[in-house]
Each structure stands twice: as structure tokens, then as C-alpha cells.
Image 1 (tube, rainbow, N blue to C red):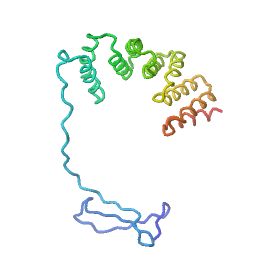
Image 2: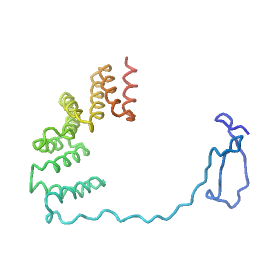
Image 3: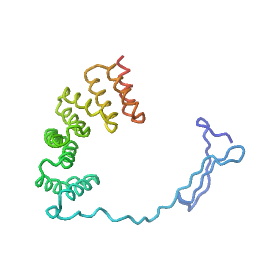
Amino acid sequence: TVISPDKPYNVDLPAEGATVYDLHLAVYDSRGKLRMELQQKRPQTVTLPPGLKDPGDPAAMNQDELDLSGDGLAKYHRPEESLPYFREALKKDPGDFRVNLEMGYLALKQSEWNEALECLNKAQARDADNTRVWFGKALANAGLRKFQEAYDQFYRASYTYDYHSAAYLNLARLDMMRGDYRAALDKAAEAVEQNGRFADIYALKAVALRHL
């Protein structure tokens, strides 16, 4: 029997009392070689590891412990629980780079643009060349519709490998907003050179090309 997308094979088989776990589908070619096989496995009971424990009392921790505890909670999608540790760390050192950077990105996720800028500016006072700070500031200024400032800061964020592609993609988006579609394509090409698997880049290129 020949099977192809335009020639499906349909057959009714008796399966009284059978469940989906009892069914087994196998497709062989004309030489008897197995080409496709499907059989639903029964669900298994899996013992899950214990969840992330409460790191402890923030007041009893030193600066590094506070930063690590807050960062760990934030990374495991528990940002509200990370705040007491970050705030305690800022009591000890209001200019702490790591904590202000994390607090800035937490504010970005909540679209608190001005709060994000305040935290990121404090972080930048300790490390003026950090590209994650520049990228965060660019996002905040874009959220505030300060597009020229964001444009300049995305360029600055592109200086290192970590943020090069993402920065150029955002520069391309800003070019699109200005109606400069050729410039957007140039930025997209730069982004692709580092991260050719980023689907958003190709979507942006398609939209830009439609306008040319």
C-alpha cells in the first residue's frame, strides 16, 4: 500500500476493551525497513526533588549571601520573595552593583521604567562598561518612549557578544518605527551574523522587505 500526504491509509480495526496504551502503530517500506513507529507509554510516577527552600533570615546574612539568595529566588520565578533579600542588601550597601542590576531588571519585567532606570543608574555608577546595564537602560527608555536615548544605549550594549544580537534587533525595531526600512534590514543582518536562529529577526526582515 502506497502512503503519501495526498494518499492517506485508513482502516478500521476491532479494539474492544483496548486503551490508547495497548495500540501500536508501525510503518514499514517496501523492503521491510521500519520507517515510523508510535506507541503511547503509560504514565509513570516520578519522584520530584524537594523545592527550593527558604534561604533564611535576611537580617542574619552578609552581602554575598543576600545577593545569592535574592538572585536564586528571582531566577526560579519567585521575584516577590527575592525582594526582602535585595532590600536588606541595599541597606548595607545602597550602591551594590549586583543587587541594583537585578532590581533594575525586576522593575523592567513589571514595566516600571523609571524605577528600573534609577536602579540601573546606581549599578552603572559602579561599572560604567557593563553591557547588561546599557541594554536594560535602553529597554527602560524605549518603554518611556525616549527612543533616541534608547537607540544610543542599544548601540552601546552591542559592544559585547552577550547582547550584540539582541541590541541590533532592537535597533532594527526602532529603525522600523522611523520608517527607515533599509537601515532596519542592515541592523537585522548584523543581528543574524551572531544569532541566525533568532526567529524574530527573520520576521522583522520580512516586514521591512514588504515596505521596499
